[in-house]
Length: 67
Image 1 (tube, rainbow, N blue to C red):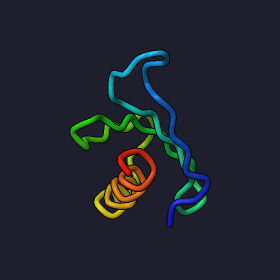
Image 2: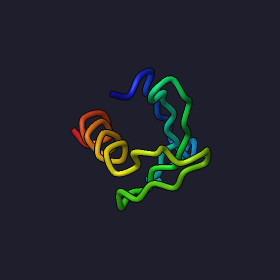
Image 3: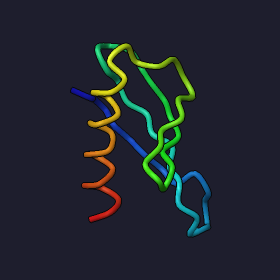
Image 4: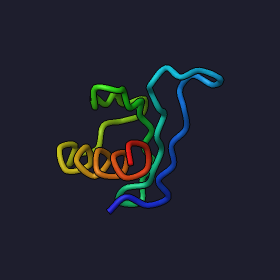
């Protein structure tokens, strides 16, 4: 489970899609760039369970940004 999930627009004062996300997973902080096509570029270390974490991020972004 991701904890303290937050996101913000990559480009302020712009309608260009792209977000920076940060969260804690298994007591470690991670940061990434989330692109409009759903791709994730890690700006910190990659989680060991990357596939599962990516799915959780997609679910949260779909809920918060696209709905």
